[in-house]
Image (cartoon, rainbow, N blue to C red; front, top):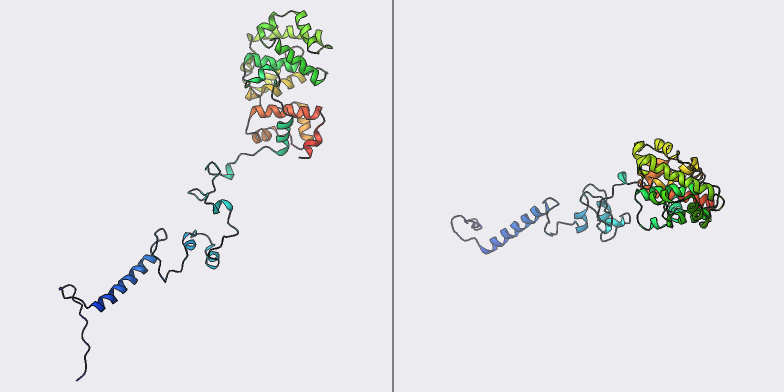
Length: 328
């Protein structure tokens, strides 16, 4: 008679108790099955640690599209030497791009060109803003009738063959006397204007200058209703037409018109970008180039910085600072 091993009782459905030893075996199998199922879950779910799961936390976080997983497997616990510092710090946006300190996505394709070191040096070290040193420059410049008229006075006096310092003193004196106000200028006498110019150090051209100032008052009042901004309106913001209309002012000339446009572009943006002929030549000699649109774009199309660049180039030329700029 052969010995037959007792059958394993497995009658869960009919209420018959299962032997304790067999229940332990089955529970262990169920646990193993659960562990395997968990390890096979999609990467975005956290899997339970098991002996079969040899992937490190770093491995689970790796980009499935990258080829750095092999490096991670062989260098567990080490930092990838090729990893960018921003990536190490976690400074990434949802699209995987690096964020700027302000948290904004930096798109190199749409980044604006920055001004060259030479241009920056000229503007910051030599580029004065229009009417700097006068009472008008104490506040941000606007296209007020007084500001535009003051720029004409500045261009008129500086277009003469006289030292920059003397002409600047004369401009300051005219503005201190209120001659940038068309009513004050129009009411002044020839003798008064001559005295003001003389006090400002403008001795050589004081008489002719006084006459030109009187003609200027008549021109502005008679043709443009006391406001030179009407020239811009009449020209339809066209630079060539504006230039022709401004040139009608006696005592200004081509050089004076250039100097005026250098300054007035800061408050008449439609005149920008502009450099007078001599400043344009200086820009070419310094290696900045003569593409005004490209230069203006590098300045983020800021008309005030364009004006300061024009004035800065004049100072570089007059003070013979070309070598300093070329060394940048």
